[in-house]
Amino acid sequence: MNLTTYNVATPHGAFSANWDEDDEIPVQYEGDPDAIAYFQAYLDLNAVSARGGALVRFETLEPDDLYGFCQSDKYGIAVMPTVDDLLEPEDEEAEMQAIYDSVSNADTFTLIGEGAQILSGLDENADSFFADIARLREIIQALGEDAPKPVIVTPDPTPEPAPEGAQPAPTVNMENYIKIAADSIAALRRVDVYRVLYALAADNIDGVTRAALAQWIIANRPDLAAEVTTVMDEEWPGELNVTAVDPVLPVDQPLPEGGAVVPPADGEAVRVNDERTADLAYLGDVTKANVDMQADEVPERIEAIIGKYSGDADVEAGAREAIAAYTDYWAKAIGAS
Image (cartoon, one colour):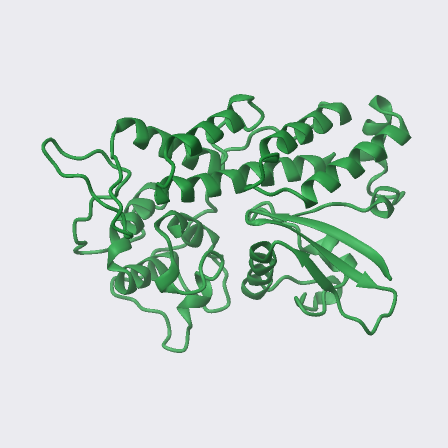
């Protein structure tokens, strides 16, 4: 019999953490395997501390540690409060009073419960996905006017660039720092390069710099060199010092006059034009929360883009990223309410 259950939203979906009344039975995870793997990688790579300074461990996670210490705006991890959390008299009293002023107690808990149920069952491949998102928005609006506003994501202050030619210590397993997006360097997708570089903590235990990680990706995946260089130049200019990068024309860039269509890795030709480039850029803006996430047009345009480029691997990957970011935004909104 489970006495405690928390629902957790991540950029890769949602899962629940369950604790039995028997203290000898460790936490049990249920839900999207990608979301669970993302959360485990987050704990492994970021040395999250609980009360007393002890590290939070995935296998021995406790309810108070999950709700009190594992939520992260930077990594998109939001833990839904339980009814007991909402009834705590100290810290939540002022916050809950604002809800009581606009909605009756019974209605508040009914709406929160409905939102949690919708959130735990969100499936981006389901026909009801956009309808479920629309209902989450209605719940946020019903709970009050304090839903989070769109936030422009900005990187943390950049560390000092590594000296030219500097490499991480030989004992460092660099693949640990891409597992937030891929199982191995061979499986790393172009659309995940930004996430991997952004997620690197400046104070990581191995002392790996963002420039060193970028150079390692280029060395092991030359086909991603142009994407790595573009991301570093746009987000962290001056950090990466690469003397030569093979010219690679990304498939989301318009072709030069008279150029041929560039096929993706699977060999299927993709129509490359300005409209597709604009659509991919829009998906990227949604992923980075650079648009008004509460606008009605966001889910409508994502859905339209998906339908327009059936079979286009790059567009489908970008859409998945955008849907994950959009879902995470509303997950945080229902959690904040």
